[in-house]
Each structure stands twice: as C-alpha cells, then as structure tokens.
Length: 182
Image 1 (tube, helix red, strand yellow):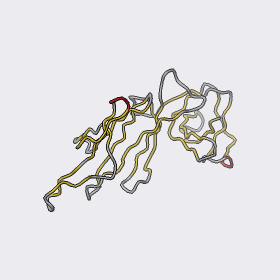
Image 2: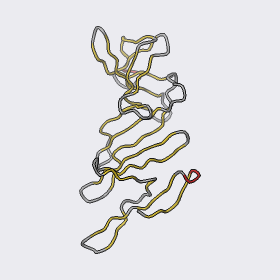
Image 3: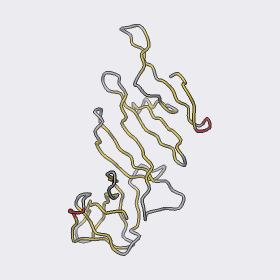
Image 4: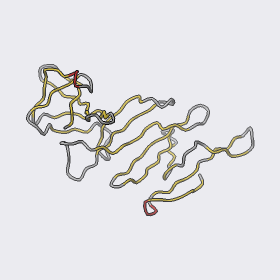
C-alpha cells in the first residue's frame, strides 16, 4: 500500500494498492481506485476501508475475484428514515454484492450492530405493500407502537422512499412487506 493523499482533517488516508505479479516480476496496481484507511482482515479474506464521512464511519469491504481484482463486497450508506429518528443515532443501509456487482442482499443496521435495526411504528396506521409500488398496497396495516425489523430501503430518483420491514403478526406469523416513508 502506498499513501496517496489525506482528507477530513487527516482522519482519512488514501492508499494505492499494489500486488506482486510473480510472472512479470513486478508490482501491479490493484483496482482503479484509492482505498481509504485500508485494513486487511485475512481471517475473513476481506480488505476493510473504514472512512469517516460527516458523523459516520463507512466501512466498505472488498473481496478479491479469482484474477486478483478487488470488488466491493459490502458497502454502507448513511440513510435518513423520516419518522423513525432515534436519539443521536446514525442508521446504515448495508448492501452485499457479488463479484459482478449485483446486490445479493441488503440490511438496515444501527452503528455497532450486526443485526437488523428495530423500530416502533410512530404513526396511527401504516398500510403494507407487497412491493415498493403504490399499486401493490394490501388491505393489511400495522399500528402505532408495533415493532418492526428494518430490512431494506428503496428510493428511485424523484420517487417516494420505501422501507422493507419484517413484522411478527400474532395471526399470520412473520411477514415481510414494504411501507411508504412520508
């Protein structure tokens, strides 16, 4: 790793990453990007890049494809969940990707947690949707005080924000549905 620059008052250090190519007998750059505060975790076979951004630490993680090319295996994004604010807490949308960049799964977590974030419904009644689409509204709803797991967030440009939740219904059991955030 070769330091390239720093940012955020010296909190973030950016590095170019090189790997030794035995056949060519020289080092070759790994990836077109710089890595922020890279930290190798050999037991997990990942390279973590904890980078400070405003009030949050974003710790993206890279795995390496068979050809040695790094790909972003896990990424965190700070999200604002209107109506679900917590005292002094940042919430993250964490996405896991495959080597081709496709999202394999997502989760909404709180800092320092490795399980889905949990919130109480803050309004009198919220309709449930089978998909993040106004046309997918069901007749089912949850009410103020119901506890839900936060699983995913969907936001198309210029569209409303949707939240995928899991709710444990006494009558139906675990339900995974979408709600509109407004």
